[in-house]
Length: 227
Image 1 (spheres, one colour):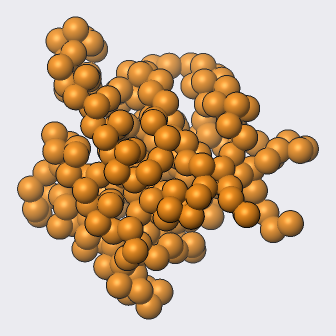
Image 2: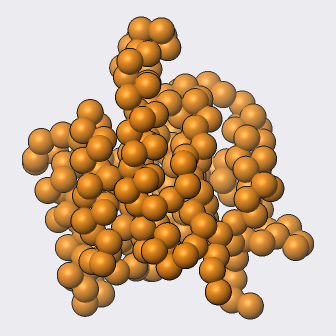
C-alpha cells in the first residue's frame, strides 16, 4: 500500500542532507512525497535581512530545490520563504499554521523533520512547530514522525544528543542523494567541512555499519503508531 510522505525542512538543502536517500526510496516505491521548506536560506548572511540584496541567491536556491526534487522523484517543494536563521523572530503560531495548512491538504501518513537538539535555531523551531501542527488528534492520518540528522547542525550541538533508533538502507538510492546535493553547490563546502560530500558519505557509511549495511540514513523516532 502506498503512503503519503511529508518532509518538513528548515532550509533548502536540509531536505536532501537529512532524508534524500530515504525519500528517493519512497518515491521509487510509488509513495507521494511532499516537501515544505520553511525558511529562504540566504538572508542570514547580512546583518539585516535584505531580500533585494540576495535576490539572485534566493532565485538560485529555489531553482536548486526544484531540481533536487526532480532528481529524487518527489513533488516540487512548498517554499514558505520565512526569514533565514531568524525564525525565532517569528511568532511560533504563524509557523504552525502554515505547516498545518499543508498537513491538512496533503494528509501525510509519515513525517520527517529536524532533530530538536540541533545547533541551528531554525531547526529547533521547525521541530517544535511540526510537533504542534501534527499533534495526535483523533482521526489524524499521521502514523509516524521521524527526526533526521543534518550535518553541521546536529553533531555540533552540545545539548540534546541525536540517538538514532530507526535506519533506512541508503545504498539503492545513494547516487540520487549525491546528485541532488551536487545541485546545491552554493551550500556545500570542501572536505573536511562537515557539510561536504565526503563527510556526508562518511556519515552514511558509519550509520550503515551500525546496522550491517554499506550506507544508511538514521532517524530518531518521535512517534510511531502500529495499527
